[in-house]
Amino acid sequence: MFKKILVANRGEIAVRIMRTCREMDIATVAVYSSADEAALHVLESDESVFLGDSEPSESYLNIDKIIDAAKKTGAQAVHPGYGFLAENPLFARRCLEEGITFIGPPADVVRNLGNKTTARSIMMKAGVPVIPGMTEPLSDIERLLREAERIGYPVLVKAVSGGGGKGMREVRDSADLAESCLAARREAEQAFGDGSVYLEKRLSRPRHVEFQILADAHGNVIHLFERECSIQRRHQKIIEETPSPALTPELREKMGIAAVAAARAAGYVNAGTIEFLLDESGAFYFLEVNTRLQVEHPVTELTTGLDLVRLQIEIAAGNKLGLRQEDIRAGGHAIECRIYAEDPENSFFPCPGKIILHREPSGPGVRNDCGVYSGFIVPVEYDPILSKLAVFASDREAARKRMLRALENYSLTGIKTTIAFLMDVIGSDAFRLGQTCTDFVDEHFSGWKVKDDALMDIAMIAHVADGLLAFKSVRQREGIEKGWSTPWNTLGEWKL
Image (cartoon, rainbow, N blue to C red):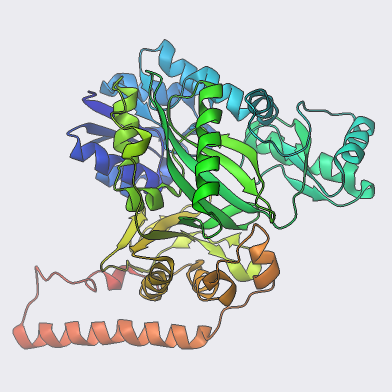
């Protein structure tokens, strides 16, 4: 087993990985940029290495600097988390060449599955259902027009590389195809360094259902059931749950078999996710493979009782899975909400800045994977995710109510966040009835505005004032001038 692991990431995912490493008696190395000198992942690590300026190319995306940090600190392995270099085959290959274990799939697998048209070809050969579309990228508009006619409108223009909705455009007729392709290329080139695009059929009101898979280097492949991730904004997930309210036991088994077949066809090793789209008729189609740990992995951990990061590390160390498909049991229901520093009233525009007050919810069945704290300045340069709030309960309705309570008790001020928006989504009749699809936000929450915003602000001001008055009263009564421990003792440093 490894003695030291470098975590090549930041924020909540870096903190989450480090906590499992600590349980495994593995020392951790954090890397950080100038924007993250006081970040929580730096404070949580056993040692840390400064990479450079806040620009990602000078820090978290700089392969040379991260490899050098691993060598200098004696880290035997690198965990990439998700985002940044997690799905970069050049980084995986470089780790191998430098004698450092990459905690993820082999570089060739990362490369093949990172290219969406190559991945589609692999799945088609393996007999996995694939969404109608192209199997190679094209740049000639005339040929793309012919392909669109063959596939049938509406179509999606999609970037061959990357993910997260970047480089994706919906096209409903031929008049918009050329402009949409050019816009998708520009965005993909900027985000992934690859402007290649292809066309894929746009399904009507599909659900996004993915299967967590685990594979070791000894030929063992299993799945850990599904997660539904249909509620999205800008093609990026914001709420996930398991089990999916749409799956019957028969459909779950069928999709699980397809997910394992997809992993075997790709030669997969370590943890990954096979993503499908499920249409209204119950037919499912391969979408893509995420060759890394997913943001939404906590809901799988809550329902199966397994630690996916621990399993990733053990597989990377060469161990056998030690689990068979029949050993995997899932119980109860789990829901996750991603808490972003974004303004839902303004097209979810990022809202960096200083967090004045951060108080996490707690209680039975509540988990919050968090990367921030009161006084932390959320940088503008990176993805604005702050935390992942997950709950577990005996059934879906109990989990839904528990999530509502947890969101209501999540205090985060100083910047705009998605908390109020998520409360309205979770509290909606459509969500309660499980009527979710990838168009859910556009259908039900287009033009959303926060309710009772002024009242919420007054309540928070009153809460802070009450705490200050109580603290002042105690200090005056007891004459305590130093050494007092209270959440309000740094309030003078905050700029309200």
